[in-house]
Image (cartoon, rainbow, N blue to C red; front, side):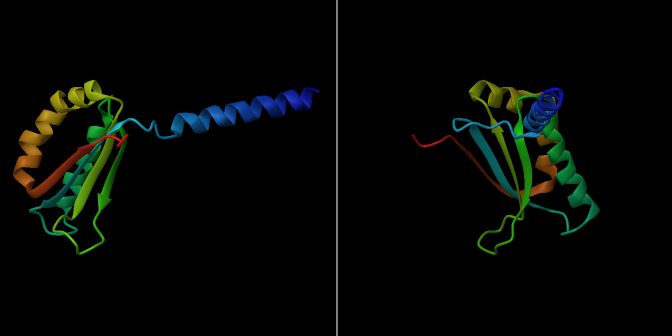
Length: 125
């Protein structure tokens, strides 16, 4: 009986640890996507630094599931993308107005991005 309790407790602990690392997502989240082309040469240190600064925005508390993606198709002129989710409009607005995001847009994005497309969407119900 003691072994069964230990196994059960171990399984519950493992499940709770897995849940903590699981993406926080639901079907009704706002998905914010932006696809862009940088002025930097492909593979350059400047390009890598830009991507890291963008990914660092994931530290803003209302951002969920931030991913940086790289284009693999020649169907458009964008090289990279950022995809993130927000629980609701208030979370999205908090991110947009957050000092770290505003600083990034003004001092990094506007200086280093030559073209972009932004799409924000919610599930079609």
